[in-house]
Image 1 (cartoon, helix red, strand yellow):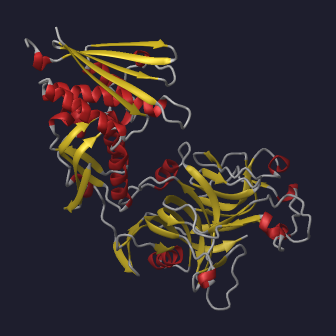
Image 2 (tube, chains in turn purple, brown):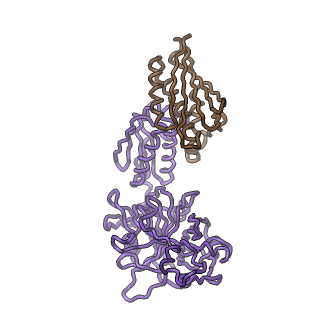
Image 3 (tube, one colour):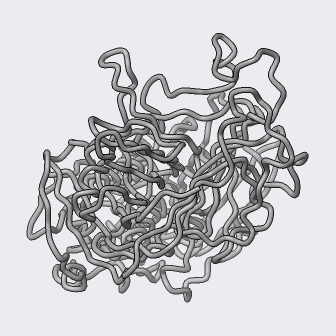
Length: 411
Length: 144
């Protein structure tokens, strides 16, 4: 089988020559996946030279039709050969899959951004949202007992009564401190969906979905929680194929777009890779030595992504970033990100699925990520600037950021 | 009436499908089968053999799948024999083709395609082997 590709008027056309059978179907799947990873959401498959189509090939056609419909893209078969028409007619798919490529509908439906910024090889489309008030951000609990492992029942807080736009911290799912004690790990909660990485050695992330208030069995030792509406949606994408945008540059652009010194931010992005750390051992467990961060014990308590992890995934990241004025005291739990920013972000990594283009709904987009077997891990994002010795930072390709200025970081 | 035979042995690798298809193409051309009939036979065989390769074996070893064609007049008898797990394709539930595409599963069409392509289909299990026998009338040979 041969596949040739061209782009016309924003539509990628793939011409397939040969058999589309149980052997070659995977090759077509890979070619279509590559096109979508490059950001193309309108695909047309010319099947005039396909000599054979089996159910394996039909499965690929159905898969991509459904996947692109989900994100407001389009996929169609054009010029079907006789074997293709026959197989699609038998399976009653010919009227659905074969047709014009809908060149204009997907784009026409998109609302135009309020403005566009281009920086360092990336474009940022900024949509103004209806928010009139800034986000309120508060720290809940304290990370201070972390260093000694002295977390106790009184440090454990349930977020049951809260319905934050997002929260990040160290937490677990359970009905009490005792129940959670061995499992506290990196936690991320966005729009009622909460994911965490149990630090009990299982290395299997867990999640809960809610609609509003956080589920009663989400317990945290400490966290940053932001409430309120976002002021801007920012769609970003690298301008060159194959390029990436570092997290620090993205955050700087979000500060600029929101015209604020501190913002709360949620990012849903197609990630080239992520760089971060996660707890390997619950910080509520008693320490054999005096300091959680002391060598060599730290190696058994924290896992760092010594090299980029979660490559070619979708990341849901949330947190706070601020550009402090000289000499300004900043809230606890913030660390340097880039040249002049501080921040704290957690991320959940999911198996790759393309993200719909244009202005998208916050809660719907987030909940859509949480489907069975899609969550891969949760981590605290790091910015490691030690040159060649460092792990660098997370690199993204395209995505969406919901941003809101923070009036004040409070405890 | 003279019976024309073809016998092909493939191993449980997807890449074998191309070789099987070429053999069926040659058989069809030699015996003046129509292009539509050859395509239908290839379609049924692709579905059955790929299904055996994908789901028939729990081990990583090489297994042989025996395919034979017997053409007698206008009736082509296709037999596929494998040593995989017991599987009777006649027991597979039919897909619901009335569902809108967004509700239709991505797979599950293979056996339906086979049943739509041939006239008769029969499965039996003998000596630890699946033996699937299909018959199809070769429309292009009617009257020969």
